[in-house]
Amino acid sequence: MKNINEVLHKLAETRLPCPTFIMDELERLYYESDENGMATALLEADLYEYKEEVSRLREQLAERDRKIEWLTNELGEEEQS
Image (cartoon, rainbow, N blue to C red; front, side, top):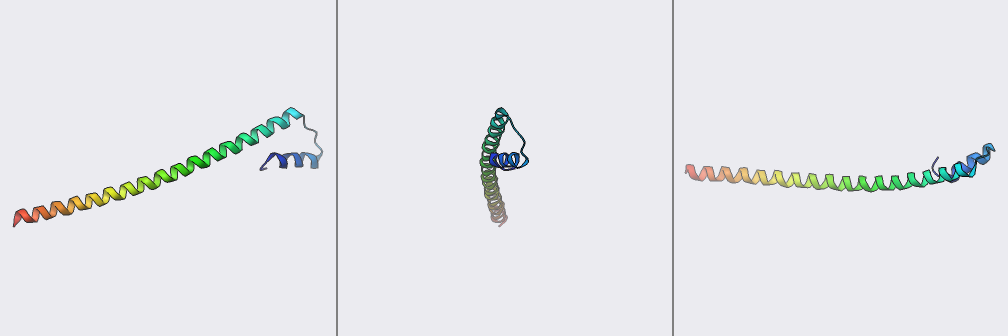
């Protein structure tokens, strides 16, 4: 069930009496779950951005390494000449 209203509807359909304190606790837990879900979504977005940044930095390092290798080869050829 996705929200407290669905729970209330199900209880009404089955005609199950439910004490107020249980309904209050259910409602609190649903709201807490929603908040945790939002926090998780934000953390996942941050993680995705972090992974993208790491990927970008790795590509920059690889490019730098290729340039260093090329320059090293160029200098080696000049010294041999």
